[in-house]
Length: 359
Image 1 (tube, one colour):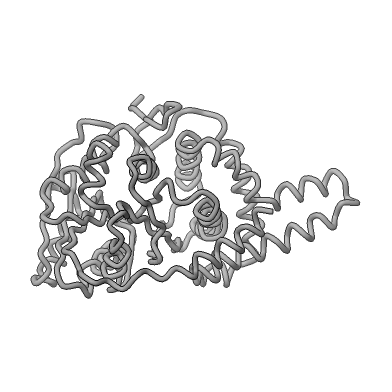
Image 2: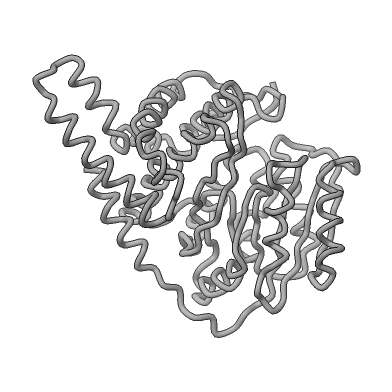
């Protein structure tokens, strides 16, 4: 059923056509940085290359010895016509360091429309124009960009990217179709300054691990429209070895279970292949169920990775989709257990309301 809904939701999403921008308001882009991600220089360069009349870029690092500073300064010298600033924030006084960086940059930003984008995002020159077009509706307070996960060279990175591009996006598209966007997904979110004020300010998110989800949820509760953008960004997820990738996915699952518990339980319906495999293993005579589940899963994967994202990785390594589905199912089950995560070398405890604190 959910695979069929994914097909419908994907086709409905592809019909999105934002209104042509009647005016192009100036935009502030906020980029929190921490160290040098794989491809960082090229990722940041794409934000200096926007075809947009007036925008600025603000960067934030925690300390003056962060190696990302050299990359930023090199790009600022390469693109002197693009207004940009670098802020050294110091250590955050609360758990979510990204929120602290965003809050410091927002206070220094000049414009009312802000785009918050992670360091591992890559875009083309039309990003800001598309965002401005989607804010032509004055009731729109927040726009969240879907993304095509781009893997690094490691095998574990590749199967994670396939899962993000086939299963994770399916859940977003179906939720959008059934109940509308009442949440946001990183790693690129645009918002009006007034919307952020109406939710209590960026620093109101200081104790939440999934600050992107909560930001969209609170914006919707405050009466603003939340849109899933028609612009698909590239999210370069790096190339982690097995252990690091496992910790990363465990953190994401445990965070999702607390941010959206019903949605997390509902993921069992978005991933029918492992259940069909278990059924046939127990009752071989039911093998047609596996064939039907496989066909629907393939169609849903094509709808998201192929039609919506134009993902060459899934097109090339399609035979890894069942393996990723099994891995995702096992990690989903594991996500129901445990209440701690490892993040940037520190252990944190997750509470039931999605907040986290150092152990």
